[in-house]
Image (cartoon, rainbow, N blue to C red; front, side):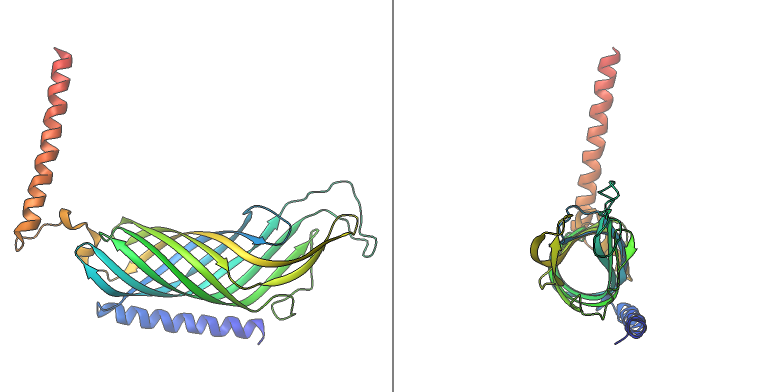
Length: 274
């Protein structure tokens, strides 16, 4: 399948899933979510170290609550993502040496962008509707490849056979509610299968060996949850409802402690002034 076709089908699927998630979210059985974030990436096995490559992480998802007891809950989620991965290295060599076979100047520069359509499935444990920790797996399909070596683009494409077009990942994720329906999260992802096998050589052309490569990345992203119930945006002890004395008692106790701390501060300040 050509890259344009894959991109078209991915965008159509993204629109359908987003529309479906928005509709089911209105029923309050499922919750929809949208997110955008930044990937910090490297490729293990490419003879370069460091998370220097940046990429886009964006998409939509659906959350299905499966268990809840008091302030704790267990949820399943499925996402549809556009996910950029890869690796990057700045220029290393400045002596003007050239490759004896191609005549290209050897600079050591490298820039790899791998574009995926990805579907993660996650299990989250949430505490007090504030902090969520989750683990999961994902399937990703390679949509595009841009690779530059020594400042020049290579002939590698998504369908040239250099890269495995199918990728399976293991994921770990933490999310924190920061304001109402807005959350900040950090995710770690690692590819379980080999995305490419390649032989590397040193600057003199000597073989360094054959290496299996894996995507390795952290994602920092912002999430917005659609149609979430207002009572889920607050910790239980901070809620107030006239129909439940338990909430009222906790609210009164919290206000009393706050007032007592204020009085103690004022008393210390007055004693210091005297």
